[in-house]
Length: 234
Image (cartoon, helix red, strand yellow):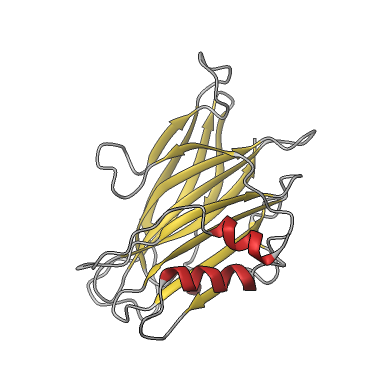
């Protein structure tokens, strides 16, 4: 895929730039899957609180291992007055071009609960994996449970938390993720919420389910919102 095509792919999702009086809640763009479903990619982007510098991070996930592929994530922050989020996204797209080879807008967004949604439960979503009316699938549930974890050098007065993510089906519960410690790259997360659920049915392969979890992380001007992906198969 040409760099120009990748730039266009990363610029699919609209964004707004507005003055922030609190933390920096990143936007996200779901970039899609490889044809066989073994890779999933997304981007988070925005304007950093405190500095006001634009940033973009591109993540590519090995869905079999539920781990970043080598070279991921690609992180860009432009420490220059006048630089825009569009500039950061373009630079990240160019740097991530090799990692995004073969990634296309495949899969379906089956549930979404942005931080601006106030009526829904941020820790529980109920959905069906395919679009059909009436539904042809048994409903599935994803649930997040938070719990405190000790972290060295945590900010005074902040309770740093880990989480476990559970998938509930008619066959029972399956644990998808459980923290025993907080990775250093997360910073100091104080809250988690289910942001998006994406399902892809690769030809001849097992369906892939990706949960995008938003972390609210201790920040300079208030909680910052960042994403992580948990991948599994149905």
